[in-house]
Image (cartoon, rainbow, N blue to C red; front, side, top):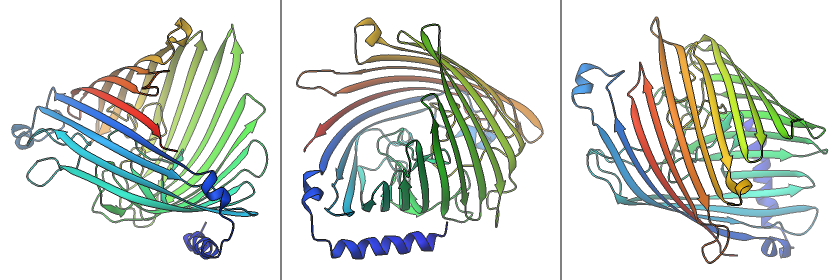
Length: 417
């Protein structure tokens, strides 16, 4: 899984692109989409847990921001021939609408040294791609989504990465994914930087290499395995299993996940040697989904992950992640799709997580979170596709500041062609 091999393949892609002749499919199969995002965040801090007395004396009690995001997503088709070539582009722009000094820092917008939110920020990325049969090679701006690294898209604009990715489906039910990523942009930044483990900025950078597969066995069973390593920080293995079972007129889904992590190289994130196990059951019936899960970490340090990324765990929720050293977490969840009540587009979700035994020094500490979401997407008419989402998150912890967070999202997708 050498990065040199992947980069060399990308250079070959560029050379082939320059000599390509047939471009009919490249144009006819292309599409351009504009997504508008209007996001409002209001966070109120309820305590100063985890802070030094000096920091607590100067701590802000509230963060409030309102911003407008625009995402231009162009995806070309492929040129004619057995080797099809194409190019994608992703343009991102975030515009400040309201906040003030001392109220910024929600992650929607960059923050200047004086504490004010930036008026605007943005970026433009391109991705070269080649397709041969069921195999696709991409190089440039990427939005990775695998169990070891999921790009974060929970604010105004998505986190983006630079690198090379090879995906293939050689047979029905089997998908392969290999890649190397060397730079990324946080969701509230226009600047790119090398990759590093979360909470360890300034201790060095490394590229992230990974390889994995997903296998469907029949219509009910899905298996997956991935191996990855963040140079100078850690290496990680993942094994997952999902199974569906028809039961009592509904569907029972079992979701089991296992992570094995260990420090490597210079170990810029410190010593890491742990296992994380998680299991979740969900029962779907007539629009209702009832879920419950349990997760525990065993060993040294918390679960490592690339800074800013989304963790592939049911415990990666609105505010907390519940992946501390030796932490044990349980979760209960309920959701309802109102299409079952003849109101398509309306959904509701509520969940509760409780974490205990998380280590801070030699103490076992606790945290909990209660989340609720209500969302609606217009199904027809001139504003078909307009989405509204309301989120309320309440978080408390022995080792981190408790907060109440209210968030409003308005989204609208426009297919320009």
